Image 1: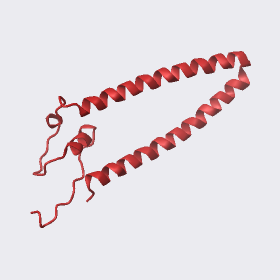
Image 2: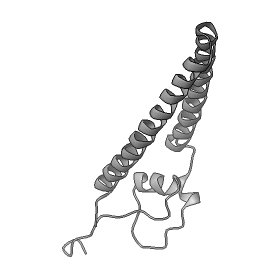
Image 3: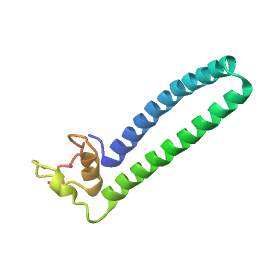
Image 4: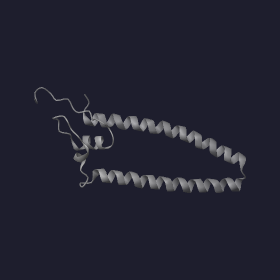
Length: 119
């Protein structure tokens, strides 16, 4: 069994690997799209299109960041009760971070193995 901190680190590492691969694929796609635009349109029109795309991308990023910030602040606030969303059928008491992991959408959370001495 993994401890909660090891499980969290593994989840973060897997998430970063997925994001990195998607980012690499997306960069290739965007580079090809810009190349096609440069070949098809005049320089002045290409600059106008790139400026418009940059503005749209910045607006999208700001909106996404605002959404993520709101979600995280809601999860970390004291008024949000994580217990009302979790049905714990075991006798094990979940830590705050384990409850957050379950509230984020996972169906279960790996817990730390209890030694026979503690029983």
